[in-house]
Amino acid sequence: MNIMKHLAHASPGLVVLISMCAVIVLGTVLLAMPCARTAPVAIIDLLFTATSATCVTGLFTIPIDHFTIIGHAIIMVLIQIGGLGLITMTLMFFSLFTNLGFS
Image (cartoon, rainbow, N blue to C red; front, side, top):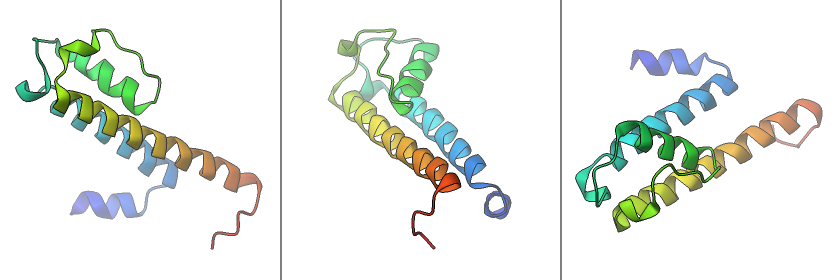
């Protein structure tokens, strides 16, 4: 609960950054589960895959065949969350220069 107090007083950019980092770590943990993989994969490759999916770049260091349907679903959710974060950052950037009508 103490973390929520600190986040309430943090800048919006910092909140988005912390949220993206938390999503990447959570995605790495979920991809590390045995039900998400068909073959053993190094944790650094899983971290890179989660980061790449969240940042919407789509780069992989391992073949996508190393993941099961559950792994594919996790990667798709990470891409969706990353896209939402990208739109949020874009709107925040545009709101610095124009009045978007949000009050």
